[in-house]
Length: 220
Image 1 (tube, rainbow, N blue to C red):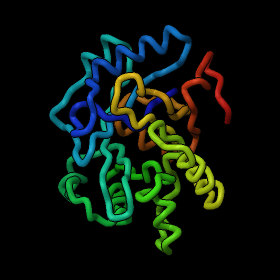
Image 2: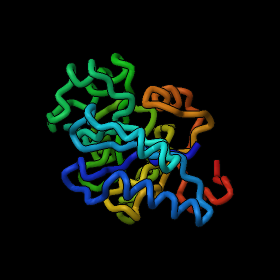
Image 3: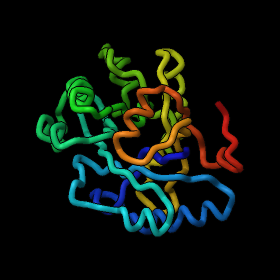
């Protein structure tokens, strides 16, 4: 099952794409032979409890899930399976939060937090590790990021290889045509936010580029 694990709609302050525009573009990608099963909307510094995309999901046969991307003292972190309890325990708008505490709180409240674009220059986890910081709870990072500049995904590759980390893929789309440029291939069925957490904990997944989804073929 191919999911874009990192995307932003107009609910984020720096995106120009609506959710409907994303799912319509996915129909174009499908007609070109690509497999795109769903997206996770990881809006910046918030979780949209009030937004329901089930009608759009049904109309276009695209799984639409919600998550968050939070700014922390040690870079950006993607959070999946967000619960009310987690948003009460952690201030999602606190850009100085310790990401290690975020990861611990996420697991405590049945969610999962992992580093976004760890190879990004200046704000990626790679830079903080090189400064001597340690992150014992990091086991998965965003290895493929569609918005990365040259060299940044390569740094994420090196981090995964040197530290034995698993990787996911996400487009980091802020524009319609960027959706699904990178995805994660899960070897399980996902229907709701909690399933994403279970799938991550299963460790049975790998990141892919859009071009690798033609006819369902992708490198392992």
